[in-house]
Length: 396
Image 1 (cartoon, rainbow, N blue to C red):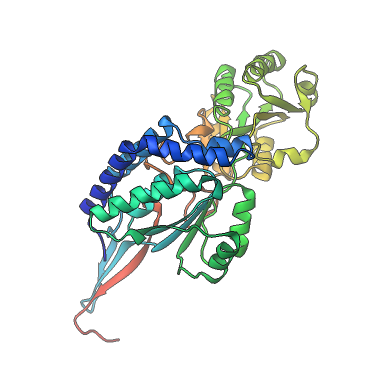
Image 2: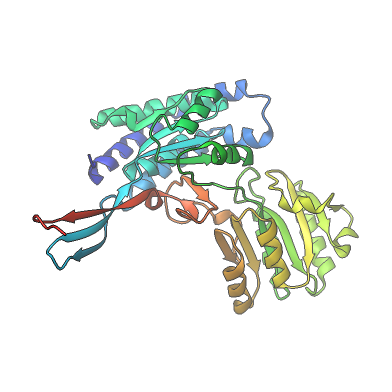
């Protein structure tokens, strides 16, 4: 039965209040997880850690989703058939959505609130490294649901092992309508290969900046450094390509290199000019262009022109985000049209590819496929459509 927007929003308001009131316990539970996960790498640890700032972000995400339009029930089109039937196409929820994710307890809140407000039932399968954090956050979900007379199974946490997860995906034992994996290539590829339910691929980043011949180079430096302001996120920048005819290129690259080394980047180079510079390592092989670093690394390369940059990005990137830095509007438009990524920027950072930054509130994922949606997946994308036909006995 469809829930009213007012009921959904009151449930979310109560959830936000409970998160805020229980912030100390959330952080304490998270400290238990951190203590038990001492052997994980720095990237996963960054995603696992919940501090006061992350709790604030959870609360803000819930509150922002409360303010967004409820898509459920929206009429997309209507038509009166010549025989008198009224034919309507309306927005409806997907139904049962499974989110499988690694390390990030904030997904338990920020992804689930979108699916909930869109009218879906949410099943959560988090990684064992975040178990205590996730179980407590789901407790808060259940309290908010119960307070508003809603069944707790609307948000269900699956504390199951690998074999049980494999069976769930293979046999669809929970009648899943959609699976969304949140994690690295290994997790995503495994879900794609084993799920009998449809999957939205939240793909890898490996994002590129192309600096054109006429670029404001100080802007390019700012965008490259900002692209590394967080290392463990899929909207980080990994590769920067430079037009070989940028005036005074070597001295400009030295300025960028100084900035990168100041934030402890390991810098790799591809191109004769770049490889003569002290502090830059030659790339071990062309395969490095395919890597999503998720680490303090950046690769700098040279190209002959914008077409070579476009071809390289389309060959090597994850199809997530790409940037052109240029003062030439026509070149920028060509780049944006021909680069095959979910988000293509002119003179702005890849770090903006995020549901919150795009005005969605919290995001479920960033889709790098073209069906059912592409880019940040938020409230308005966690729905499908259905035809409603009302007649008075018409036959064909």
